Image (cartoon, rainbow, N blue to C red; front, side):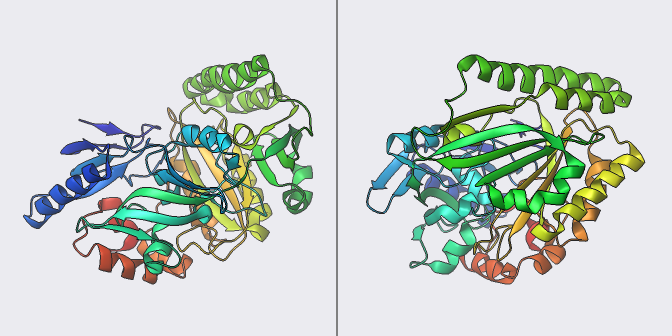
Length: 437
């Protein structure tokens, strides 16, 4: 078969596809792949989720293992609010299940199609200057290692394996269960509207600190920004949730169907990009509502694109955006997707983009029918000037030499990998490029 990711920019032809329903299925698949590797005829094993990464992390000519049969909550400790979850559980199933328990994750990304294991393996982060990425909520992991053993790790048991595997790139073993530190379920008061980029940049740091979660979308070739300010409120506080008709209008019709047609038109006539961005930024109007946190964090994304995202120190974000704006002004590159800005606090996860650093995240997107390379090359050069760390699941060109200088625990990660996968069962060309095999 041919495997293709969601965006369509990565394809692979695995020799075998295995769908695991039980942990024993995973162990059996790992054992067969390891035997083939030892005999010199195997290309290794990679684990595939829902394909929402834009990098070839999953691509393999060997065994492609899917975990979509391992899903659901497997254990709950009400006192500690810790929950064990099967690794193949997608967020659109996990979030309502946590809600039923009166719990929630403290932060989430802006889509909910990924599996839990895929999201933490690539460092999905969400936004909030006083919040941290999803991997920071991981307090335990159970993995199948290359020798077929089943290992549970945490800060107290196998701590080095735990620290490496919280954002592990699928390079250490197959994560089959995740223990999450949850918080009581909470509601968010969302205020969304447009502002001028030139005005926003003068007060961007204050905006990030003033709100629990801030998400900014700047439309290139314009001075218009869609800003989403989300703040926690007590039950019963804030305005009512959006009515169903408004969801259908904003999230289905305007943000997806109309937006898809707009992008298709620009793909045929690139010179129309500036007018398209002015139109897109004008039809997405203001709205204000309150709802369960996970319903506010996530929104449907049906228009396909490819993405590059870099984490930069918070103090650099204005300079990065200013340089990007100058590049768009000089080149008039036809880009219709907005540039997204988000923020998180620092954490202690070895391969987290926020390791020991408060971050701003700058993401650029291009419609999947258009060439992203000119913009990606320009943006990557800008990010390099500001110690940018690339999102592991989004397009970038950095390899081991550069990544070694960006991640203080890079060597420690590789030492753990040498111990748990000395024969490099869990690898492919992209992983070799990242880790320097």
